[in-house]
Image (cartoon, rainbow, N blue to C red; front, side, top):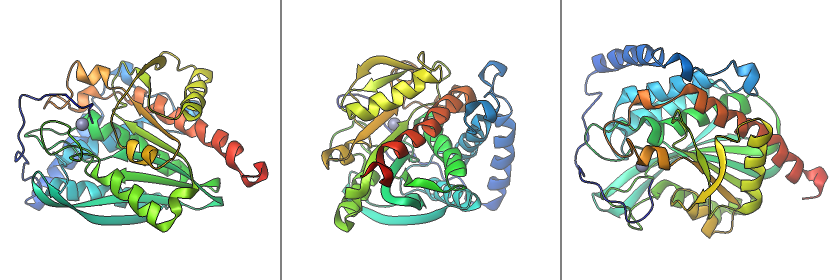
Length: 330
Ligand SMILES: [Zn+2]
């Protein structure tokens, strides 16, 4: 993601690596992933899942490692397709019902691009929908594997799905994995960005499902070891307050800080259509270091940070259920 106006010196629009051309690569990268996953620094270790609401930060980190091992995962590429397969197979393994919503983004700066949103759908007692979201694509640049940008939040959402799909929830919960968040051009200029989220928002508006969404909760770039999540200033106030106060209650006030900053991201297509939204993102740390650079690698991601965000998301769910359950007359 980015705000408008950012400039990159190393735009490589056609820099996709042809990973996965032979099956031997897959086994090799799988082993690399296991080794890399074990290499997180001891101080970055996630606490036991019992202390983070059942959310297992180490499992989330392994998902990030597996996605990174695929290599670049830009929309419309072989790496992107392999990321889709990985996400779908993991979700199905958790017992989630999975929708694979393919579409073609027409007339992008690199032509028509086949994309796919993946949505885990967990029926609830109420038809009201709580929609969690991440993007899984990576920016189309040479040697860019997006460990934090695209990887970290996807790992969190996969681990969240493991918890949520296994239980009966009062609210219907959807967890969306968006394709095509990243701009193909070096710079972020509308409409060359957020292809997947714009597609899902439009489809849900057509079907009428958008009117059932009570909250849209986006995570993006949540893996930094010095994670510092400012309040995104366009996000809906009550929803931001609910999440930040939950984080404070759990002792994460040094991560969920009170500063604010506007960020353009996958929440905006839903905000524009009147949905209550929040974007949980640390832009500042990546921007000052590895953002949209080949150095956005697995060593930038802390299992402990993933655990903190996952813990807050898990604990946010019952509060939203209290707010919107049928018993509360909504
Ligand atoms: Zn990005």
